[in-house]
Amino acid sequence: MRRVIILGSTGSIGQNAVRVVQDLGDYKVVGLAAYGNHRLLSEQASMLKPQIVTIIKDKNAKQLGKELGHIKLCIGENGIAEMIDTLDADKIICALASSIGIKGIIRALEKKIELCLATKEVLVNYGNLVMKKARESGTKIIPIDSEHSAIYQCLEGRKKEDIMNIILTASGGPFFNRSLRNVSKKDVLNHPVWKMGKKITVDSATMMNKGLEVIEAYHLFGFPAQMIKVVIHPEAICHSMVQFRDGTLLAQLSTPDMRLPIQYALTAPARLSSSTDYLDITQARSLTFASPDYEKFPCLRLAYEALESGSTMPAVLNSANEEAVKLFLEDKIKFNQIPSIIENVIQQHQPRDGDLEHYLHATMWAKEVVRKNVC
Ligand SMILES: NC(=O)c1ccc[n+]([C@@H]2O[C@H](COP(=O)([O-])OP(=O)(O)OC[C@H]3O[C@@H](n4cnc5c(N)ncnc54)[C@H](OP(=O)(O)O)[C@@H]3O)[C@@H](O)[C@H]2O)c1
Image (cartoon, rainbow, N blue to C red; front, side, top):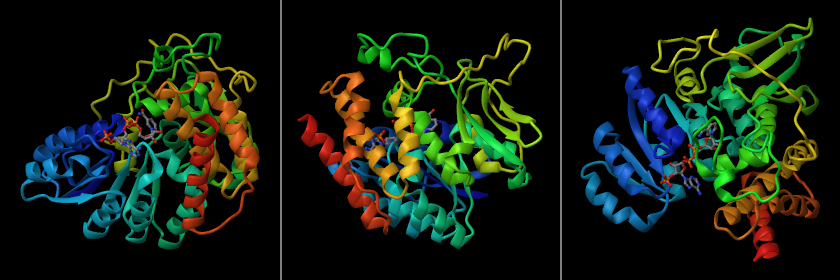
């Protein structure tokens, strides 16, 4: 029996992860964490009977504690690290909507708990520190993001010197073929393919999501930014590709269903049958690919530039974006203000390497600058 911790179990990826773990059978959930949705967390706990549950926001902790009975409750950001420290686990699925669990993630790597990672923000903000910790402890990080899972699978057993490019596909979001004029919140949240949490749905519309994925790929696979390309593929059937030096392209294709990369992250390199709809390639009438429009979607350019600047710059980019997206969802800014708000913060930042506290400080600074500029 494999013992699993799920961070972000109440979210889109988290709920899919719960379904996958139940379908697989040979897995036992020992820890659950969410931000504030105590009702769903309580339901999940009574169904999965973990040893520990963590709620980050303490507002509803008392009520949750009563409902959990004998299950231990941890509270707050530090509660995540405490839960990970206490539990004996084989795998941890990180699917929180932000990098808030970073101290716990680092602790998990130290304890050699294999990290199945959906939260790209963890690598965008702290990639240097997280990858160093993974190397030192010899702990695997297996991506859940469908593009990175595809690349991970295409790279398995390959020599680094044979790789020419890695190619991330992007659905293009709701505005690929539409003007960005008079965009409403409803338009932004109406993703043509994926049903996801609000933050990543906004990021898909600005294409910041793809930019963050470029940075995530840089850390996961260790190729320079120039070797990481983006192509638009609206059908979202080809989840990404690797091009080799002889010109060969290897791709991973499947129906767009996040249960598949979640399952692969848990079972890799083994392949088990899954409950997803299997792709009938004869029904995928056409697969189209196009270059991204960097002028229409400046966030993608900003992400490449932040990656080139290095050290704290991607963390500042990501934090400024998180805050801008939050303000957009609260109707405090317009959709087309998001890129310029981020660019303004980046231009004020001098990137510098340092320890975790230094990176945390840079992320807080970026959020503060966005708030000061807007409010
Ligand atoms: N959804 C996808 O298809 C998909 C695909 C690839 C990668 N990802 C990545 O996976 C991560 C999770 O995405 P999602 O779509 O599952 O998000 P989501 O549905 O919004 O849920 C995320 C989880 O994070 C918690 N959360 C809420 N506010 C938070 C905050 N401020 N800081 C930290 N956690 C918070 C939620 O708890 P409560 O429910 O208690 O609020 C929930 O458990 C993101 O990093 C995203 O980029 C998602």
